[in-house]
Image: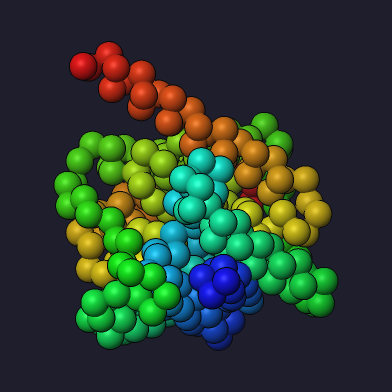
Length: 143
Length: 143
């Protein structure tokens, strides 16, 4: 567990919680990234602008962070682009079919005590753990 | 103009949270899912802190009749634990376990300039569109 970073994990989690609180309190919306993002490309005319503003804020904050951040914050990955593309397809298909991802179900849904979201979160974590086990320990890809 | 401003601030806080907690690093996410390897529980604290704060704040926010800048709360109405929810979440989990990306971190890390998250997000959108078309055909076939 030498990679465990509890303090920044809690701080980052609180920022995400604050984000979800503000969006619900002022705009009455769920901070679910997959729903916000897909809706930005196809929502009704009056319902798309705020989605793009949200994505713009997300991108701007990340860009500034990566510009200023120390080296240990630089993301790293060792996957082939084929695997990344397959993962993207599955996540896009699955989050749309299941109506949510880590933020919509995992954070906002559980916070509303939604049984759908609790079941969804357990399902995608179990599926993720099983898949990572297969990929890392059975097939032996990655580290 | 008020609602776009809230959306941009909420998006920025969300992006900052993902960066500070290092959830933008797919290896960090995979190290959480890899409970049989060198386990890193950080993601659990991120979700725990985010959900904990949101659970507390939603307790007050959702007691209101409306949000501050809109005439209603746009909350999901479905209560069904159906096949779509389970299968969709499971497919999402498999994609998550392969790549270590869920939608939020992938979108945020486009700003690193790395090719990988950009490829992921393109296929994320493609996957969501395939689900949409597939659902449309499935509905037609059954009617």
